[in-house]
Length: 173
Image (tube, rainbow, N blue to C red; front, side, top):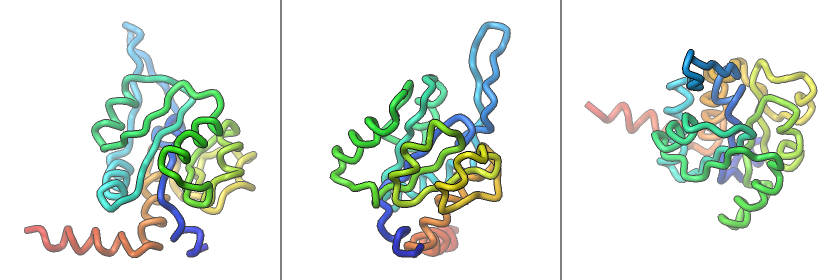
């Protein structure tokens, strides 16, 4: 497994149910809201800071996702995607990566095609059971509650990056 983790150059995340708890709320004016876990955000930002690419591929479209991605420094945001493989292939061509370089995290059956190809696959604790067979990693946390953080930390730790991050923070006074 360590070998698989050493090949990772890009982390691709689903949004609803992975970066969020999967609930979509609307206020009286029809304004959509979502909640993101701040600890997931810290891991995403650190992965980017230390040279990994992070991308979002999601079936829904939301300004909230654009805002959160921008806040974290995620440049590759694909929303309203029906065919995640076509988008994934486009992303791989853009960076000249292979599927072995991909870590993918999702939570539902629409993630299966990407999961079948990715070099390292993670799922949330509350992911649907139909996708468990494709996972190399199952978080102990539900989507929107630290699952992404745990997944990214696993990758960063295997590559010796997480310990450097901790040392950087220890050095800040």
